[in-house]
Length: 173
Image 1: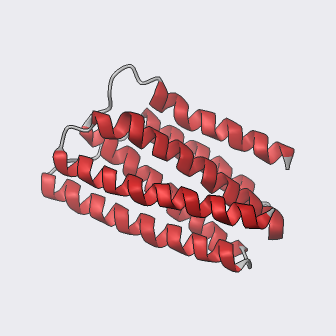
Image 2: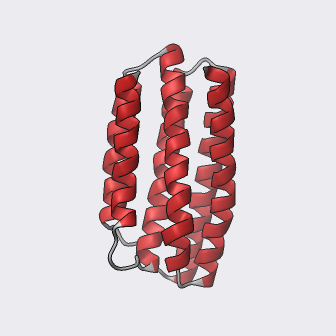
């Protein structure tokens, strides 16, 4: 468990490093890609959880993550299409994907209560990091009013996800 917590900490640092040290503010196409990538990551994590958990609280949480993140990503795709913007891959998106792939591989080796606790703790940490990035960098850097509005709506939803994950985590201890 200590190894898992240390890995979570490392993952959180890896997530924030490209966001916190960006010398230049990301462009709207980069922000769109980062936001979409973050959603895809959580959908994949939710699908893994749904395939492994038997805990009703964890299952309910994962179902909510899958549904909500798919919905927000559909809204994001519709918006970039409407605005005729092509999301731009970037170092932050790539780092997010790489760290998430490692986390999914790590989680996939766990079962039962160990999986449930690790998945939920990962979700708490992930939402803290994404919410922080939205608040401090992505939303303030966004130029397009419609994209900014979508990110602000997403932030409110994702703050609720963080609270939900923290509640589930408290019940798993």
